[in-house]
Image 1: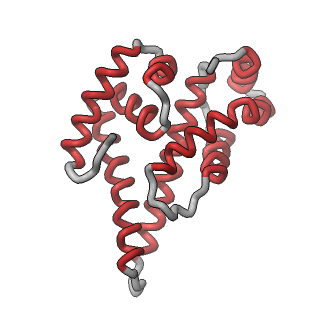
Image 2: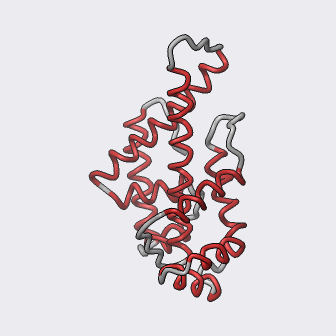
Length: 188
């Protein structure tokens, strides 16, 4: 799949220059890949998650449209940022559900408690990834793109402008670190 086709590059350059319509025009060109990334994010969520693939894409789009000072370099960078925004949408959604469950007087069934635990795991992964980024930003970015975004080694290398061997090394080291940090969460 060619991730840096000329029409996308032109639209990204126009958007970077301040043309808001360019982002609207870019969406149809990258929608299929955004859908794949959103599906990958949701695949790691609880089975009956209330956000659907299309809603996740639209939430990420709204964050892009409202973002100030976003400097997208190319289509791969755009996809990496979209993946990060999708992750943040899911984390914010989980935080909201956990907060709602914690409000006084709310009765929670066992199955609902299990779903809250799943959402806490999402929050735990997010917190661990934030800690990882404090001492190795690149490893954290590799995890975001590979685990949350579903990008291949090659796509991740291209998005981060590093070699595939560096992605493989960072991916292995980050998975080991995260597994140790989370202990009870399996990071594939």
